[in-house]
Image (cartoon, rainbow, N blue to C red; front, side, top):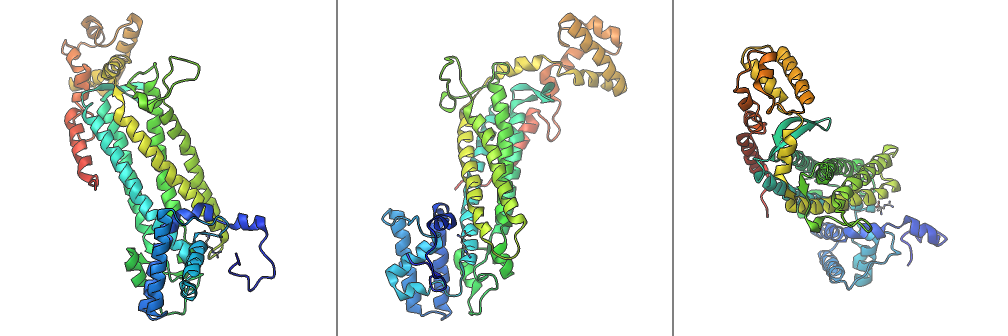
Length: 460
Ligand code: ARG
């Protein structure tokens, strides 16, 4: 195929250079957005009289035909084309002749590609938000079933204080809610229409940018032609929001992996969401969670690619920027796959409440409450803390828990202790007493659930 620039050049492009330069293998996924952008541009060119109305109409029909053929599978992408933009323009010209050649009036591939990525990614953000919302709903459903499942809360991975599994799960719901917010925020800045920026210096044609913006459903037009073609902040912001989602999924995965181990056995994954071993017949492995944790590194890499790609670029467009696509597409594809699989895994897992309760009974996680008991009877907290420490040491010596240590030992250490201490340090009381907003008591958790369900976007 004759290159666009054949007039200026004396030689054919080297075959390796052609392959090296080509982006169609990865930008073909933007075909629909490219065509819709061109339809809006051609419509506006016709309305403003920059091209004949009849030509504009035939371009629009031609583009619609190309879209229909691609979607029907009757038009294959030419893998030797330079990019998706040239492929579609060439197709149009083959179908329409002269009229097709007028489509690119008052436009450059630089503003065209800037439009296409924004337009394409806006839809992807909507999709990721939907998937994340479904995950939050599943997490909330599991929480609802486990408001009474007392488990040890940890710091330093050491048993620390009693909480419930519901409360623990809802911590992830809070992270994912912030992720939704970050996605929305990235969307807001992505939602600016760059066509009209031209190659870099806009255009002398009297085009109607606002009309194109309205036709494409963007919130506003970009304000500076150099910025319109050279801004990739929106890729970086989305990449960062996705990297944060992955970080949250990865922490959650790490816990699932721990909880599935015989050392914890807090949850059992559904057979459909676990894998076996090729040699050890007893194994049931949490591969989904491990893969999510593993893929997190790859998404961080995508974000790093984008940041490094942009850091040394002079204004305005540089071909380096073609590298934005594989990175952001990979981040988008990966996070979607991870959320979908992860949601199924959480939805189907069995929660082993008895094992959680047993683990909560060990490790002196009610020691803080024991100290608080003395504080409520008038002892300064530091003294109460010390007394309880001595009691814990005594328990360890006798291989007992605070619940099973006889009252004499308590009274020996501090005469403020009465028999009602056993009630005060019962795990149910420890959890139930923490009923302030943000606490693990049932009523606080139910309030939290109500709050979350109130802000979750509605399902379509
Ligand atoms: N394939 C190119 C990209 O993704 C399209 C823009 C090409 N512009 C140019 N001046 N060569 O960035």
